[in-house]
Amino acid sequence: MTFFEKEKTIRGFDNSPELTTQQLACTYLREQILSGNFGVGMRLKTEELADTLGISRMPIRDALQQLHSEGLVEIRPNRGAIVIRLSANEILELFEIRATLEGLAARHACENFDANDLSKLEQMRDEMHRSTDNLGLWLKLHDEFHDFICLRSNRPRLFRQIRTARQAVTPYVRMYISVYHRMEMPRAEHDLLVSIARRRNPELFEATMRDHVLSAGNGVSSFLNQHALDSGKASVSQPLKD
Image (tube, rainbow, N blue to C red):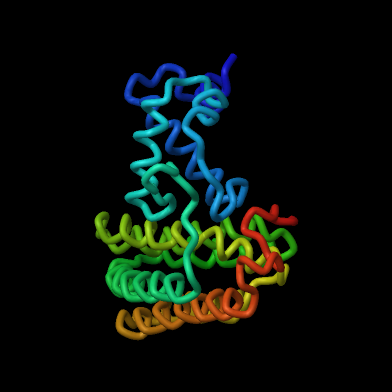
């Protein structure tokens, strides 16, 4: 059984005619990049990837083009695809974009929150607090917390733009956390977000969310300025230690 067939079975897509080979290849490559298994600057060879997945080269090429549009892969003439390498300033810019967009989503979400939403938000925050000794789990719960807020904005296009901006910096966030092995003020900041959501103040919720995202961006970009990727002091391909 090829890797492709195993993944299809694991994900429960055996009987799903809608799933294409290109979609599964794209999902696999995206996960490898975001998890740090495919490090920044790594060359993604079509032939090797096709052999690994047990599929033809065309779906791999299509998947790489999709990841290029998402800002995760760079396509270079005569060199092929590589995992994109961003500068500290480029990463800060992406956080600034995300901060503006996610602030907007937070404002709309706050207008839509009902009692069940607020209870769910508190539950998700508490789960994050209980997982601070497991950084991999904390990152997953953190993304789910933010996704929940953005989805309640009822702005699907806005949500997709936010996810794209977040994914583009995820490898660098994982590197930051793998080096420091801690989150930056996770409890106080998320407690504040939940508290303001309960006060049903959309404008304040927007401003707080924007500041929360920018604070993370400043931390990651400052870290990268101090630890240049080429120095070898830190590597995005370094596995996260849970």
